[in-house]
Image (cartoon, rainbow, N blue to C red):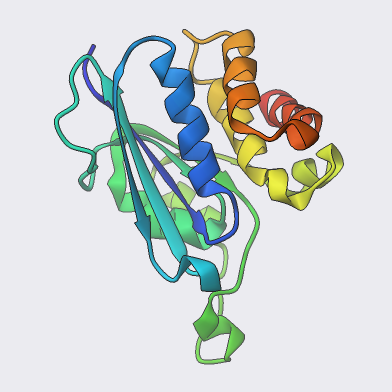
Length: 191
């Protein structure tokens, strides 16, 4: 199997790292060679967080170059726009429609860009957008955006069963949050 590339982008505290670890666990069940690389900016202060997940028969590097991502999983709309150039021409950008103001917007130095979703669509990208925050809150916690987005991503992973996804969730999430995270995943999968 040729190497597949998934880029996960978000803001510190949104659960991007858990999402990449859960995805890695899922892929390990098929004995893929997997490389995961995490890039932390000012993640503890709401800064950008990027994780690369690469898998296939043999993966030589954990880094994804511009134009190589088969999937971008974005937890926030501005992060989706920042990552768009990493998507390959046949790739799919799955994004939460949530907007989190970065520090320049909070301080008034800049305005949050208008109509980012429209601009992404104008670029001719394959965009799959959903309000993952509302679905996460419906599941029981705004912190479950990561599982909502993984649920949406699961629709594109036709070789993996829902049971395999559930097993990866069970291995990755603390027991006291398990049912809520399973519900978030299901809501994202069926949204």
